[in-house]
Amino acid sequence: MPTEADALMSRCEEWRDRLARHPLHRVLNEVGALRIFMQHHVFAVWDFMSLLKALQANLAPCQVPWKSPAYPQAARLVNELVLEEECDPTFADPAGAAVVSHFEAYCQAMDEIGADTGPIVHFVRCIDGDGLASALRSDAVPEPARRFMRFTFGVIARNQPGELAAALAYGRELIVPMLFSALQGRIALEVGGTQRLQRYLQRHIELDGDEHGPLALRLVNEVCGGDAVVRQAAMATAADALQARWVFWNGILHAIDPSATTGTGAKPEISGADAG
Image: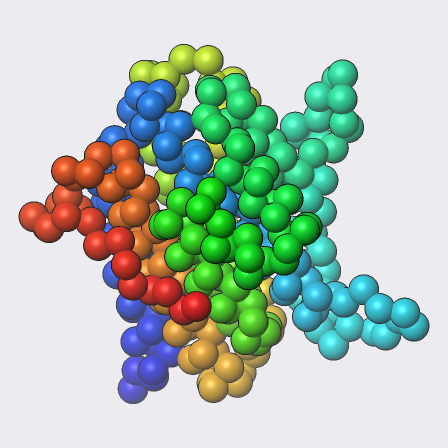
């Protein structure tokens, strides 16, 4: 007999199918639209690292005196993810740093195509000076990105390893290759001068599709184990994360083309899935 977790898994598959057909894929075919997309999406690149570090703090905490991790295999998996996301030699600059975080690499790709990095730079500086709550209220943050980050930090605030792992796996690692593969093909044909962006996209298609996606799923299984209650909560968060992504993409689509629809005859829904 199907369990509630099975029903939630089906809901996740439905959201993934909807995201695969999202009309945002079709409008990223010229540099103006690509700039708007990146000016929104960079906030998701940044808050991905906060989600990942929150999971690492649970599974492989930095503490003195040291204690053996409760989930050694999960600790290894999350540390592998952090290593490549936070200090990747793939994006090394011969005249600069030997390793670069994926967030920094994305910002460099934004500079390459003339996308405005001012808002994300202001946001990060505001966190340093005034804290996250104040930064999230900043007018510099696009509203769709603000809602998306509030959902992410709502998951982080609950601080449940199973939910963190599920949001990471289903809401990030398993869907990013889908978007980036479509985007890579379009910009290769229709947008020039995107070498840094092409390299960023290719790296994530390879990593997330072949390595990080499977690693993230193993993390979910390691953390949830055979606990039905923990797995149900994790899958509920996974479904909510996919819905939050849908709402985020609707907001980006609306910013690119206010007249666009989601393919159902209705204008994009740009509210909802806001877990505070």
